[in-house]
Image (tube, rainbow, N blue to C red; front, side, top):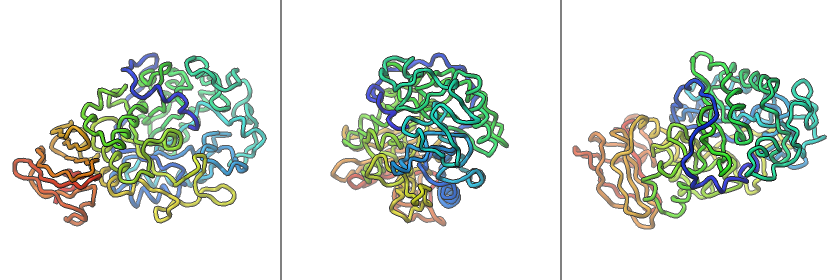
Length: 479
């Protein structure tokens, strides 16, 4: 959410954390592949991309932008963050209506791609939207008054911005950048939100990314998301992962009883390592994180960090691609990727018509970045799927910007962030044979569209990896 990174600085390099306070909820079905955040993509475009690319390439889930009716900030140029200011829970946003949303969910599920909704439950609209109605679905509203939904009594009494992030009460009861803070301890508020989220599940949604979680007590989040119905046709609990920008006052571990949690420390460590060419330090990556691997969602960038605290983004070219490739190869956390739109102004909204309705997303249009289609990233989605359940093996590094490692007997990856070629014979645990380098191509009709890699009878691989590039092979792309 916008400006939620005010307290991020204390998150990177934090100490180990212990879960407290939240009630355990039933286990969810495992995520089958990487999550790609299709930031601000319209519903029709997401549906098409699920069928044409994401499903066939092994992406497991799409995180879509908030689908509920939101404020319309035309005088501000329809910035991206207007979507994070709800005014009702009807499915009418600048990305499409209820029918389009439901069709997208059906199409993506049929393609083997689950849909996770970015759920805004901490707040409603903000001070900047007062008198700016109607909303994207035509609803009239005022701050603290959303007819048929919430009235003044449903919001916390601290009607001012958070001023002290070291005061946990203030963080959870005052307003984040002027957004009307819902009293999530209220039975009416909880039941209203449960109804909204269950409506989405009834349409086939498989899970939720929960926005702004540190601004709600763990027990409130658990009460809302623990009461949701199972996903139709699967019997699985909805997959829940929570945005928690941990600091000295709020720990990520406080929320693990409700589901997975975003590990913000990850992007600080990994993106910096690839930016600076100091990859050898990543051998002990899990020891530097605050959460166990099976409770962490990790990323190189997301829609907030690429605007507020960028280290690496799509603008950094191949260095960014290699960092995302590492995220998909290394066995820590559930990887979350982003695919959004090009921007120079950090407030800018997606490509849109004069009325603010988002235009169709197309990877042939330079206005849409389509990071997920970059060859080194797309190929590593299949790598991630092929090596699931395997451990780190055969680690090698030169003490600097060159590393290599395996994932059991299923895959092997090499990363070179130095200025010279990496020419080396590596020991792997792979079966002998000819493999496709999935960072440069794919296996199509029994042959590789990119480079090939030979694995000897003893599992050895002799490779020459160019400066600032990588190589990756897995058993699912073996000739």
